[in-house]
Amino acid sequence: MYTQALDLPQQNPEGRPPSLAENPAWQAEFDAKIDAGGFIEPKDWMPEAYRKTLVRQISQHAHSEIVGMLPEGNWISRAPTLKRKAILLAKVQDEGGHGLYLYAAAETLGVSRDKLTDALLSGRAKYSSIFNYPTLSWADVGVIGWLVDGAAIMNQIPLCKCSYGPYARAMVRICKEESFHQRQGFDALLQLMQGTEAQREMVQDAVNRWWWPSIMMFGPHDSDSTHTGQNTRWGIKRISNDDLRQKFIDATVKQAEVLGVTLPDPELKWNEQRGHYDFGRIDWEEFWNVVNGHGQCNVDRLAARRKAWDDGAWVREAAMAHADKAARRAQAAA
Ligand SMILES: [Fe+2]
Ligand SMILES: [Fe+2]
Image 1: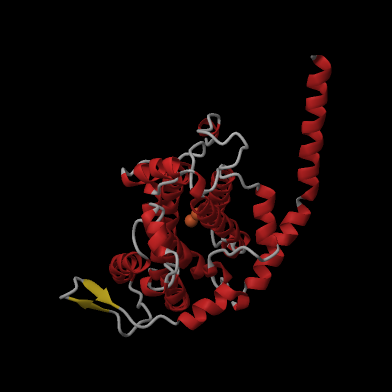
Image 2: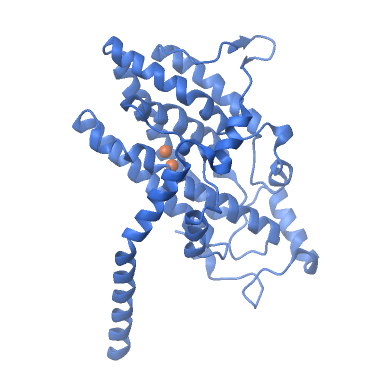
């Protein structure tokens, strides 16, 4: 999927993009491409800061997909029916696929998968804080689909037009699959809401716990967001955190009405003048606390990833031994 763009480097005989200051002509070409809304491809020259920003963003995104499999994976064996089990299995598998496309996109920027994995497992790399909250009931799985995947779609649709070609193309497929994730969550909740009083209470409890973390997924307010200006200039970010959050809230209030659940924010109300819903204050202290490793599940999530890595060592070793043997056979035959 990504390899066609890799075979014709624009320049850089040393195999490394030269620094920005050394190449004013290439910088001008890069800027012109961005200004025209074109894509930057792996073979193109790019400023080192642009490359680093993308490596950070795409790898954090990939880690989020992989860690994001854990809270729901926890419910595969406990799904209430075979139908729900099959849907959840497909959904969690999709998230693994998203991680794969995104790691592959990051690799086109000259960083190795091993290095990215090491950054996650050593705790140096970040991933979306939403996955550091626990899934306490079956309704949490529905609410994650509805709110968390719903917020992810809002965040990710603008990335289909991001200036880095491999990332943008990966996002097209990811967004289609996220749309299924959001709908399966909503559908599971709709069914629960038509069930018993206890089931409705379970949904409301899950909504109460996931609402605020979901709207934190759009990140700090624009006034407090350090990277927004440069990332917008580079065509990596198309819509600001606050605008995306507002779009998500406006769309979700109506869906909550259809479901018959209450969103846990007494200040949530339609503002005729703004043409948007007003909402209450976000607890940024909680947000930063979880980002900085002190959420309910940060330790468990990393421990689960480390265990999976260690348990999978024999598969990696066997694959390498097989590749080695095949190469030796091919050499002998030649
Ligand atoms: Fe995903
Ligand atoms: Fe998803």
